[in-house]
Each structure stands twice: as C-alpha cells, then as structure tokens.
Length: 201
Image 1 (cartoon, rainbow, N blue to C red):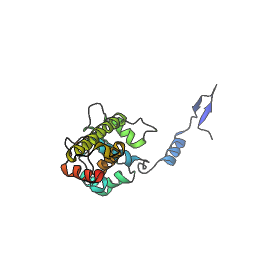
Image 2: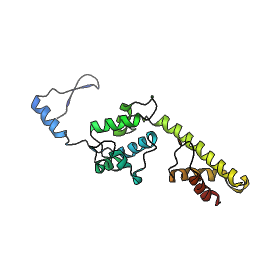
Image 3: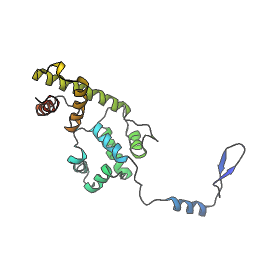
Image 4: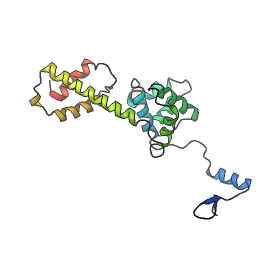
C-alpha cells in the first residue's frame, strides 16, 4: 500500500494512519545502534590531520593519543572510529569534533564538520575545501624551501636535475617523513635524508 495519497498534479500527501500502524512501521525501520558510515574514518582522519598535526598517524599511535583525551574512551573503540567507519555516540562525536574544530580558526563551526563526518560530501558540502587549499599552498611553499636549502647547501647545479621531478619527489618525501606545512623549521635530519634521496649527496 502506498504511503501517499494522490491529489491534483504531481504532488502527493501522506496517507493518514492509526497509531498502531505508525508504531509497526517505526519498529520495522529502527536500528539498535548508529550504523557505520562509509568513509567516516577517512574524513575523521582528514580533520585530525588538518586541525591537530601534532597527533601522530594511525600507525604511530593516533588511537592511543585520542583515547587519552577522555578516560571513558577505550582504545579499541577509538581504533574503530579511525579505521572501521564506526561512528561514535552523538555525545562523543560532538565533543571530539568541538575539540578538533577548536584548533582551527573561528570561521569553522563544529556542526557542519559533524554532519560532514557522518554523511560525507555527497550530502553535506565539505567544510575542508578552503582549508585543504590553504594547506596545499603551504605544503608546496615548504617543499620549495627545502629544495632551495639543499641546492644552496650542497652547491647542486640547476642543470643537473629535473626541477619538476625533484619537486614532486620532495612532496612525497614530506608525507613519508610526516613533515607538516605548519612547521616553522624542518629538522636538519629530515633535510639531510631528503637531500640523500633527491640528489644522492
């Protein structure tokens, strides 16, 4: 039986039902827990990367650091948030998002981020667009600084390398060594490792 009744044109109104019907339909669609959300973990990790670069990645203890924020959060639960698209309770999600968004500038609000994490960009516009663009620019600027430092320090002739290839390799090495665009100075050890990989010096 259709849940709508036809009226003039293409517009349809809901069919009036008794309370027993409403109750039966509600029980039929009810779920015991909030379902997993495809891509939730990826979006949550992106927010963490953008808002809190001091928190390590998943392989290096991200779940441990986050679980230490709240004594009620078990590491196993946090790992599922970060890796299994498991959505926290409404309270835990709200508190985590408020904490992370609080690390950003005042133009970012918790509610749009919370909706984006749960439902994704197909339903909610991504609040990360402007932030990603700014972060990308900063990362590219940092890569250029690293290359310039290496070339100057080791007297690398400009004609001895392909600038675009070296630039792209430097961006990948920054990810490998977890060099953040926000870092004021890159550690000398990282610069030496990148120099060895790019120019064999």
